[in-house]
Length: 129
Image 1: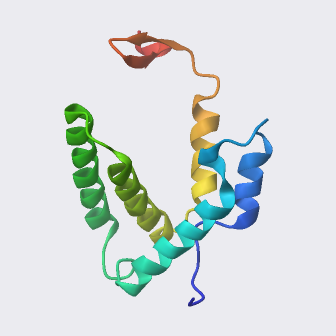
Image 2: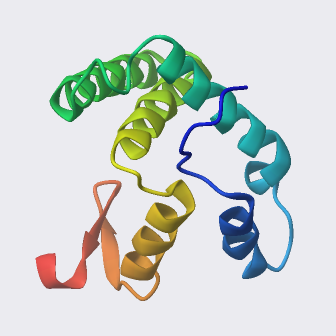
């Protein structure tokens, strides 16, 4: 593997998991770390980091979210769609030198104390009610 900057360091995953009381399959760090490293290398090998723009990748992300929406509405399997979305997000994170674990921590800090209620299947923040 070629040495390149990465968006995810092992200690970042450890910090992310340190606050959890139990291990859940979605937070099984070692396989996820290896997959992310492989995906980052895949992006570099295809010149998708330096040969594309954030705007290009956001357009691709929207396309992938559209495919997810289509399959959710049709009741189809969505694993590939979620994976494709994650692949594009990894690209955007890598090109901006942003750590995925840090992004998740920032998002969690933003929502952890949020209050609101469900309206027609959507969580609406208190200030939006």
